[in-house]
Length: 156
Image (cartoon, rainbow, N blue to C red; front, side, top):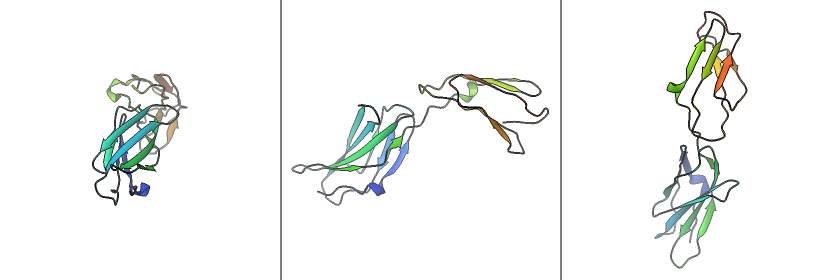
């Protein structure tokens, strides 16, 4: 029974799922099992597939997962290949929920929380045309204020 080549794996992810595609085993008549284990946790998601691709779903947002593919065939021991760890993405904030208070030299913002728990928010204000920017340190708070801005200039 032949395993898979870990370097052939291609990954994609979103907030709650990781999808993997790999080159098939050279052994015919096999099936595959993708295992996604959350790093630092006992949480495991396992998906069986007759084809060389699978998706682990219902994962936690913003977490790292250890991935393994088992090649399976009746009458043989599984051949397990460890793949690269992958991250699920963070849920973004809803940009339409951001409110602004603007003065001549400052911008204050408030926003609704991401549904990903335990995140920090980083606010960056970039002056249009120059690329000069000001960033605040990451914070758990749902508001921020940037001051000492140039009066009459555009920022994003």
